[in-house]
Image 1 (cartoon, helix red, strand yellow):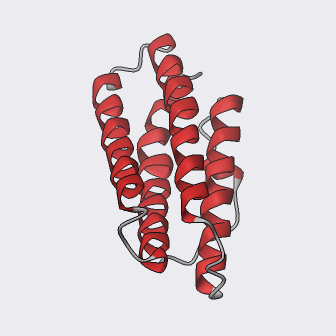
Image 2 (cartoon, rainbow, N blue to C red; image 1 turned 30 degrees about the vertical axis):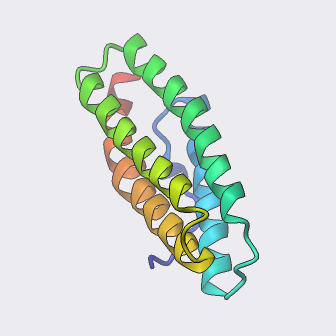
Length: 132
């Protein structure tokens, strides 16, 4: 499990809406990380997965619209990466009622931390140079 840090404006891509959405996602992951680390597993896994489903619907739509507007050359690949993350959240949704809650929480935490570190802080930063 990764020790989560504080939000920094260095994580911003330069679009206010996308940056706000990324920060919301960051705060959810940080909160979940702190709860799991401290043993407070009172978090409802179903609520987290629902948040992720809602977030994906809203954020991916907004981000992909922006990427089309700025003519981001790697849009197709970016969409494919978004689709893979959506599939991983769908798998978690299916596992919700067939697995132990602590296992699901650990898996959610792993998936979301990796998404933040690997996608938001690296791949999303790639399109920031097209915003200016």
